[in-house]
Length: 395
Image: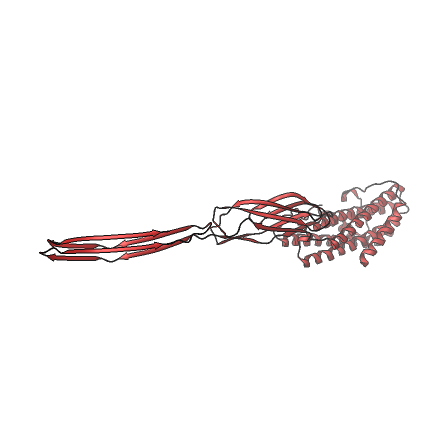
């Protein structure tokens, strides 16, 4: 908290100083070509200025996506952007140090041009810092704890460097007492704007310390228990709840299998809402179908908060099938006599197939019976016959 208190002291003191001096607002021209600094006795300073202008970061360049696939993408993008901001701040500090060295050798007009160049670079840096905090707020609640801590420390360091740069800029303004009044007013107005931007960033840092990332809750369940057949219709229910005393806007629910369920919903303090989504199950790849859901929303401080639901798994029905086979060998009967004699082959097969029959389950009985050759022979007055009887009761 020492950093916050010191920054506030600098901001309040600076605002009190410049508010009394400003009569109207103005702005410095953008672009390095607007400043005539070929007069600089230190060529390395001009080279540093040209380098910063030639490697300007565009506002909003950081990242423009919010759909959560992997938080590592956010962390990597933020780290890269934050590193470039820090590199710019270090170069700006070197430029201010070199400006102090050459300052005594410059006349009033040259000092105005050089200060205008520095002001333009500081303003661009302030815009980039604002972009950084804006995107940090969007993904902050989605980051792991260690990344939250890392970017908080990074944000503090950037704010500290920015405050140091602004104090250096203020020193140059004190040494422009001999500049025309309109130039002084223009610089003071710009400085006031930079200080106010810094104050806003400081408030956002405090918001990062206080944000509740867990006020939005989501729970998911299915409308029926037991197993389900492939191709059967099923309904999921999604329940979202606001556990805080503020309103959450722009809520969006996305299912890991079915995509977006709803979007653009708001929840008042402690409010609960539920939504249904029906789909046809089709899972040839395994005995269960599992999915989760996520809900995103925006809190009053423009933080994106996210919650993930419980996992819901549905058991797919496996058809009950009886498969049996029966093979009979060759049967031969022979009767030879002058008196009546009989030769018969008698085969009786009895099979009772009971399939398991439960709600929503398929059942099938399959049986193959292969009967071998049946031969019965009779000579003279004898009789021969083959009899096959199959009795099957399939349930």
